[in-house]
Amino acid sequence: MTTRYATAADIPEIVRVINAAFRVEDFFIHGNRTNEADVAARMAEPHACILVAEDGAGTLTGAVVVDVHESRGHFAMLSVDPPAQGRGVSRLLLNAVEEHCRSADCSALDIEIVNLREELPAFYKMMGFVLADTAPFPDTSKLKRDAHMVRMTKKLKTHAG
Image 1: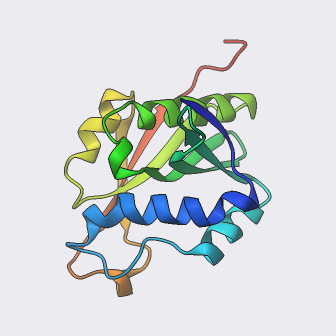
Image 2 (image 1 turned 90 degrees about the horizontal axis):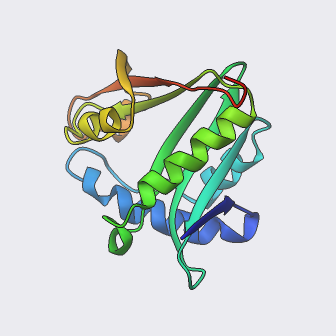
Image 3 (image 1 turned 45 degrees about the vertical axis):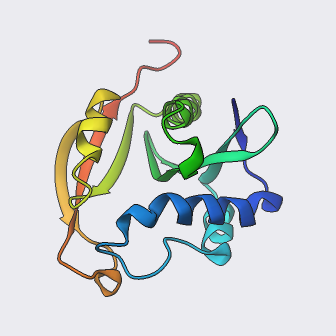
């Protein structure tokens, strides 16, 4: 399995993978997680990119949005196609995210997760993240029930340090 930066040609498959991976949130979210316009807009952001994972046959198995602001990296929508889950794709993508952020001289990496996804804090703790604080859910119109965001962060060692 390999990772690479996404191109515009990947957008339909990125949307499919993200929406399939986020079906687990149907119990508290209305509708799909993303669409082609949203992914294209994220790719067009000046300090952002999307990293994708591919299997040996060139099939897209995962995606993640990464952005860098000053000395902090941030990632969102870490997604693994359900048939590829449990094969190390998340770890592969997170390693690529960290490398991208280190190359941009980031000292930390941040993520926000929904409090209702109770399995996620333990996963991210295993990957070296610690709880930081909480924040309001960004778009309450999508919620079927109350929720908030949990912020987690991880210090990054630079290539020099």
